Length: 466
Image (cartoon, rainbow, N blue to C red):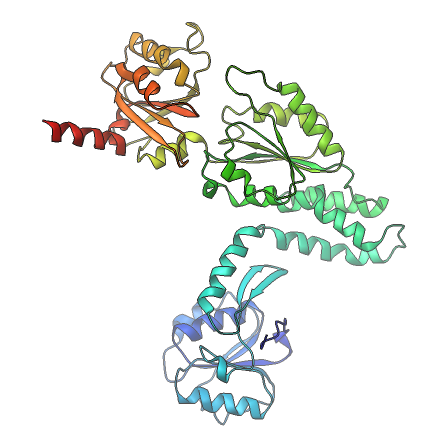
């Protein structure tokens, strides 16, 4: 390790920046974001645009047009060179002679410090460096860290900073480490990270006054796992899964999604398979509450979105009634994920101006669904859990006046490696459903199905056979 990562207070003096162009502008904005007082030697160029871009920064900005080789460096705490020429070597040598830290852009051999790739979350800053060997690799690593760090982690750090003195001023029975760990890992931290700042601060005040962290009760997160592809998880879902003590998951949650969870989290299957006895909703509710009361971070992982045919609303109401902190993390519901993969626009100007989601687990009951309300030719109808009820859906729509030739499709196991689509006229919907095999599937009825990739492939095969 040649370069030791340290954090420097740049407000103690002046930072000299020499050069113009893109590299210099980037360094100017970075220095201004760090509250540095910058003396900039841009050379004989117009710097109006760069100065405008940096106006939102902090600290003082002075633009100098004299020769930096003979400028006074007595109050300088760092030098940054970005000319790309011999001047860089001259100024780097001068800075070394005066024992001033110097960075020369893209020249680690001339530099005594380098700029890392930075993840900036306010009071929380993560720096990634490769010793100047590969800035591109450092940026790639930063992008991965960006995805893992909660967006509001800086807000949590600021909240803790405001109350550290209050905690230290009073003699406590608990160790500071244990107290702050339970704050960060418990409901207070969860509230801050999910944007409930006032709730988090009020709970922290209560915890400080009572010498308790509020961590006796854990939290429950109702998390949407998306349609199956783990790359479609939201960042917040991934963060909660990585922090979970216990995960209760459904049948529709794919193995790839579960692989993204914390390795030592306890995993409990609570799904319901068609034709087989499953765990009742009351029992699921009880397990969620019991795990939270034991102080655990609980993730209730649901395929798609928790609030789209997922009983997330029922679980939310139950947990609220029990006084258990709960958050809801939306997921990409199956209709959106599967349609996108199939190249099927669910709405289309002048052709499909309405979109309706229904569940077909009661479609074979004549009075269960108002088919007349679904007969509008400009409506795209998406039917969840419809494989076994494809005939009832076809019959109900046609009897209500929907054109038998309306394009229809079955999207099975969408976004997963074994995804399959079958398309044809509405009259053939049962046969299409039978052709795709088992597994989660959607029925889609509407003119937009004719714009899907599968329909275009079908039309091409018909033309080739003619």
